[in-house]
Every structure is written in C-alpha cells, then in structure tokens.
Image (cartoon, rainbow, N blue to C red; front, side, top):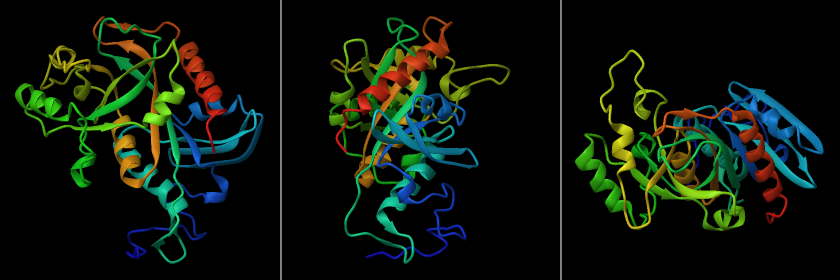
Length: 291
C-alpha cells in the first residue's frame, strides 16, 4: 500500500488538506460544485440550515441541508487545473488516512454535481436551455498526466476528426454517471456532449485583439457528427471532473445553464433567472438522491 510523503500529501498545521482546509466531518458526500465563489451563496440561500462555512483562496465551502438533504456546495474556480486540486483533495479527505498518508481500506464514494454556465455551439439549442452532460470531450491538458478514461463508443471518431481538422493533441472522451443522468433527466432538460476547453477566449474561438489559431473553431465543432452524437456546448471543467471521478470511483454529472449561443451570437437577457432555475431544479432532484 503506497504511503504518501509530506511533499505529496501536503497538510496544513491543523492537519487538514492543503488547499481545501476542511475535514470529512464538515462535508457531505453529495457535493455541488460551482465555478464562481459568489455563486455558492445563490445555492445556499435555499438551504433550511447551514452548519459550516469555510473560505480559502477561490474555494468557498458551505455545508447545510435542503428539505432535510445534507449537501455541500463548493466553488472550484475555473479550469481543469483547479479541478485537479478539488477532485484529488476531496477524495483524499474521505479516502486517505491523513495522519499516516495511506489509503483507507474502505472507500467512500462521492456524488459530485456541477452547476455550471455554458455556451451552446448548435444553432437549434437556444440560450436559457438547461442541459445535462451525458459525456464530455476534453481538449485541455489534464489527462496528459493520468491514464486515459474508459473509451466510449464514439471515442475513435472524435480522435480521428480532431486529428484531421486541428493540429492539436488528441482529445479525451469520458462519460458522466449513467445513474445520475437518469435521475436528473426531465422533459424540459436536454442532454448533450460537452467539450471542455483550457481557456475562455482563444481556446473557445473568441478573438478580441490577439490573433487566434482556429478562427473557424465553432463551425468545425458544429460539423462533427457520429450516429446520434454531436458536440452541444462549451465549458472549462466537465471533462476533468468526469475523468478524475471515474479514476477515483466517484460518480459525477454536470448540469449546464446555456447562457450564450455561439452559432447565433446571442447572449441571454435573463441569465440570472436561468441560473436560479438551474439551482432550484438541481436542489429538488437532490432531495430524492439515495445517501
């Protein structure tokens, strides 16, 4: 059994994990993640009771209950580099003995639900849509440092398409939790394939003053088709969450509020209302999740 050195598993003077700085007792095993620290309060405003609040760097963590369901809300910041910290440290908090650095024999599986804002890349998916990420395609660099996820049915098609269209490292494809997807599905909520980027401007085809390498990025992503699969929306976290959750034995699902449509150039005029609708929908669905 591997024992982590103090330089690998870094702890604070109080014995808590380095970045997140909380104990397992302070957290629920059902964790809602948001990118923006200020959005934590938008979720916990609906709680019946708050038992713990903690702030460190971009990580704001609040644990409480909604209609009797104990939940933790955690801000990750933006990007899969932050996801690398959050997923590994959440797992360590629950599944490594922090006193001696060795993994526990009994693993606690976590439920991780991302509440994210996102942009549609298909003209027929309008702004203010709520969309569940059935799976994700990562064009970020995180999985260059971990084993590849389990291949999906369209993984080879994605790799071939990106190789012929772009001079980029091969993307990785990874599925979300099928059980969570089934639980959260609703008539008014769409399902799609999210593509996770390493940035917001050039990597997502936005050109302000700096020239970008792929000015037709949106058009080329729109054109990908494999049977019933197409790329539906952008973000900066989902693929990393799904990949690390799979490796660590946790289940994860991303719920997206689509605030922009990159195909039509439209941005939502009711963004806050759409985000609030997503929050209420997720909280209600969580009340019937098994512990």
